[in-house]
Amino acid sequence: MDVLYFAWVRERIGIPKENVETDAATVADLVSELVAREERYAAAFADLSALRVALDQELSAFDAPLTGVREVAFFPPMTGG
Image (cartoon, rainbow, N blue to C red; front, side, top):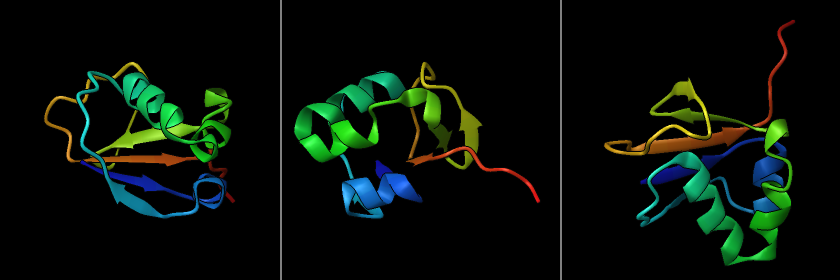
């Protein structure tokens, strides 16, 4: 699946997008797999309360299942203005 990173998440990880092969059942499982890869992922995902996630461009929760998902995007909360 494609995993996209936006704003400071992208800055900490160092790439805007990657294709990830995973057996993760949920978004939280995917985050755990990414954090185990390298320190830069651990830094980006250190505080999940400061992140939002979208699955196939729909805002979702970290306990959401990944079955059939093609795209996961991580980004900080946005404010209107």
